[in-house]
Length: 118
Image (tube, rainbow, N blue to C red):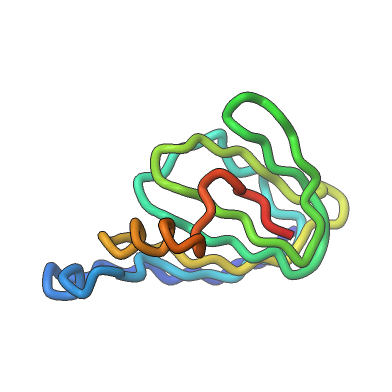
């Protein structure tokens, strides 16, 4: 069993001109279902606050996820992950998009080549 709360937004063109817009936020905890494999067209930062699980890269390499941890889900990159099926984990997430993401990536705040950040 798991619990979830999510809110998805539809920013207007005026909001998009700001350079960075939030598309959605959420909190989930418990024995969450496996995610993916899937590919998104926007960024999502997933913060794992308690628990363990795994993250699988597009080439099939599996990495253990142990809280506290950040998962970077970046546009166009397939991802696949899940908490431990028996104990689950607690996660919060924020989805976002906009041209400012390129600058945040260049500055090293978004790390597409490091999807699991302990």
